[in-house]
Length: 339
Image (cartoon, rainbow, N blue to C red; front, side):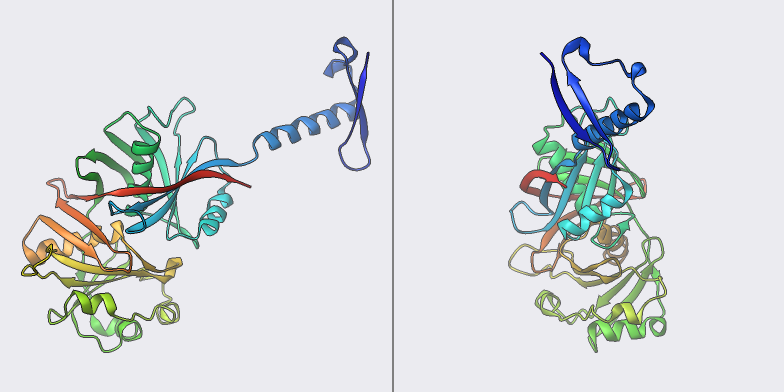
């Protein structure tokens, strides 16, 4: 008995397929137009089979509690992803960062391999470094995928970054970026637009990251920084040269506080890459660590980022000129992204 199925492949071309063992002709016996139609059908099947189904997670970084710290989306890529799809997914997730972990070799395994590619995208663009999304990526691999290694290496636009498990969280090995004095008059308009007449004690610039660091007067306290209204809406018009891609506001800590003390506080703003305010920022602390280590004469520090969500970071400057930044992470969502 023969069963026929009519398949249409566009342009009015129809092919009747006979399904009955030997009744189906070999590809070499088909007419060219039928062979082409069959090829189109097979390609369509492959496309449907490749219909995007990506494992995706959201992890809150630099916190031990859900709904605090900085959330990042993490996608695991079994296969190559179209270049423009990275940005589309990041826009869809609409978090400050979406991370994409990819295998470097076909035989790699997310549970057993120790080295992966890693890229980060804001809703607006790809960025060269993101600490909290790296921490979130490591947390997903360690805690959800149960990766068997104690240390993971990520190949990124900022070189190789390592994340290792520790008793009190995950430790990131990041570059340490030096800062240099910045002339006030060159950035006066930016400062006035962002924070008005707020007293600024020191101004530094990180050319490697294009981040501008403003240290507020020591007369202010943590509460002042937390409640400070920062105007990010007009910064793109005031600074459009490309020199500045991020604005750090920082304040010396209050060691005499009754509660847990921190060496310094900060907030971070990056409207130039589509992030009005980032809740907790690892890459900013790769700059802040350099500055405050010089100011305080310390290599071990405890920092707090004073966003609405807030986050804690442990900092340790390394002998090799890099910095270890430690934080917790809580995976709050896992699922499948389809499109």
